Length: 206
Image (cartoon, rainbow, N blue to C red; front, side, top):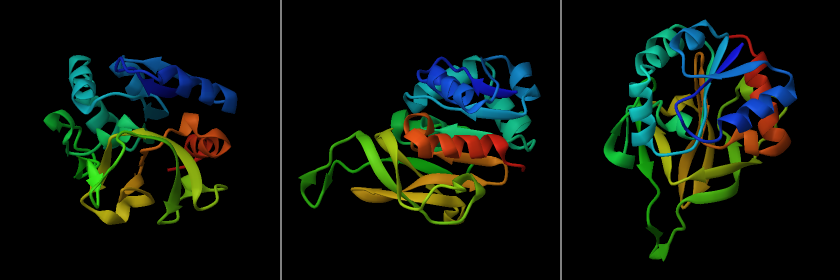
């Protein structure tokens, strides 16, 4: 069973519908025991880093995700805000995040060369596969994926980046380390390519 972490954010049902379409059983849950027992865990959603962390703390899920999922070796996928809260801290709300991946999350610049940069980024953007990884199996390099984000992750260890994009500045769009994979783009909103990545995560051995 795949546990979709319910931390009272939006977009959870979209991920569940995508999984159902692909033939994978899932459950939206905020129960620690169900998350710990799951074969795989997905942390998706939209929202702000501060509110996300407040809700995870209130539900008693911070240590569960850190220790009983990520560090225990359970396959763990973060999507959108789910990639950002994996890091140590975010400029958004000055939030202290999960600290599963070393690094920080920064806001896009307000302007580039004196020209305003529209923030948030909303729409399709080309993702360069900067490092081979099985989650991209069957997905061509430079495929477009769907983004909605005002902030972007900056890992301390650049070698964990497997996908990159440009939006005013170059930024990390996907990371992978051992059992933890995360994307800044929305797999569930990215058409056939996004579904392929989601299916790959669900079928991969770790």
